[in-house]
Image 1: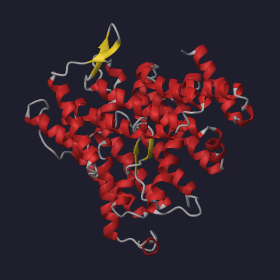
Image 2: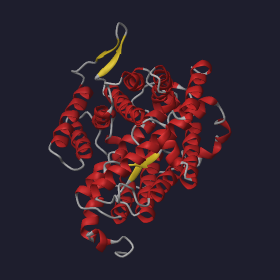
Image 3: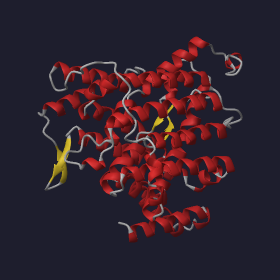
Image 4: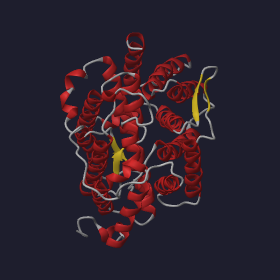
Length: 440
């Protein structure tokens, strides 16, 4: 085991890897509760039952997808990088594809499945680098920041901190509402933990908020902590049932968005974690193909189980900071996700007031990419800004991407830099223009 994971070469040990794997798990354990809340859209009242996914089944799918993805990454790519259903992509799945576009969640799962398969093919054929290079780095940064704003907006809404307003579209909610106050308390606690550098600060913030909510009778006490693993039947295999529904321009846009965000989110996470762990060689990422294969395979598995896109988690850097250097840490994280399956009774205490702080803080972390955008170049600033601002205002990640990808070729051509635009970007320009003409 030590030889396979190269403990001696990496200067690590079982103790360091176990502590690192545990730290990574605690840093991302919030997804076990936030993902079911997001995909079931529990914060949206009066939603038809057929539009909601089963929260218990999603909990199981989340844990198993995270376990399989993390173990695959550890065993195949040998990186200390854990995987789970991605934040942002789950919001896009629920609030844009299902709620706004009206796509059945079963069909949306089919879209996730197809995007995962395409990701695998791109990895195996070597087209990955061409596609990565075709999309400007500035737009990649804008997409990440825009998703961060979108997630924050969703969190503020679910906590009723921001509500609808007839005069101004949106406005400040009733801050004397006990549930809203509980969410605000959770935000403050989580911010304090994060500023103090507490590993797993988001997870601990959720725990403290839930406990306080139970103390003040705002959250019902759980009947038990440990229970039987819920049934995954309501979501398992649904991705296969609606594959014939994905051959539309609308679903093509959805699939491309799933693929695009996962593609670059994964690439960024791999580089960030590998750099921190000192695993980069000559500015190149060893075994990058294997890492991307593990990521895309996890997306396929997750879609079959019944969850949105599974992706690499930047929270893995917390495990690296605690000493993780090899894939054994990811295996440890995966095993912990499997053990978490027995704690499903705690889902009942994870209300929108508990998950809202996590959404808001994750959003704050994602907008850090704003600082790397070249705002002094107007031909870059316009498409980047429109990408970022459209996502929360139109309540659609896909619409934000589409707007940015339409304006980028226009501004660059007018600037006299048409040759800098990759042919793939022109193709996406046409696709998104058609999308607005025929589908919006």
